[in-house]
Length: 272
Image (cartoon, rainbow, N blue to C red; front, side, top):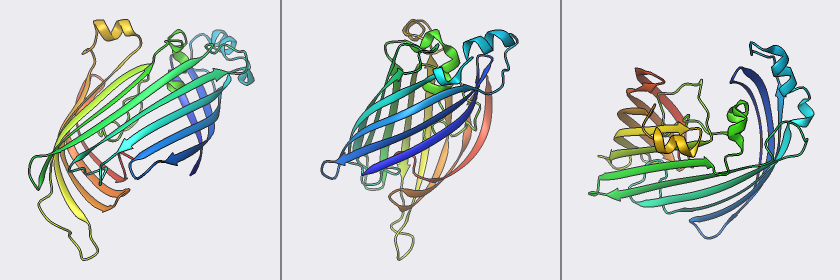
């Protein structure tokens, strides 16, 4: 199966506004019902998009020629999934690991190379026929730490905590960093069978999520819990099809240095 994606973003970080353009194509091979091997190839361009820095000359010098600030992305991903309903799992597990290798081709100010690894784990344990305990973990790291010398590129190549699964209280304006960790635990209850003659189920959940970002391995060791973002609340979910669902969540969580109430509504899928 082939996948073709194109993404354009307007980004503002460390005083420099950038426009990021990425186009990629991927090929996936499904080995059996629960294994997937994916290979991807892409091209990224980072161009100046106005300069919000107080030092305009310095910003222009750093990104004077957008053609030089481009690179190629090579990625490989492997996943194993035994969850029958990924968004409302009652038992089973999901494991995926992805490695993305970025190589500059313009000879500009970009790092020599960057290597990102991401891993996701979901486990569902049935406590009874109607009750399940679910845990999710997502880890990301630029493990050679090449990008940390250019924080201007964190929004283009780094990680954020904006996952709809882990952080329903976030609506945008994300922070970015080379390393991240997110986790969520939830207790899920499905009291009824199909709600219509065509199928469909309703699920109720209570959840607690945590996440954090770090700029270096040293910061992970010294400030592991500093600025940890969290959320907790209740969810009502309706399963229509495997990858088409409705999620209504409400609760409280941190948003930067503030604690805010939130209500979120999502359509589609959160784990696939």
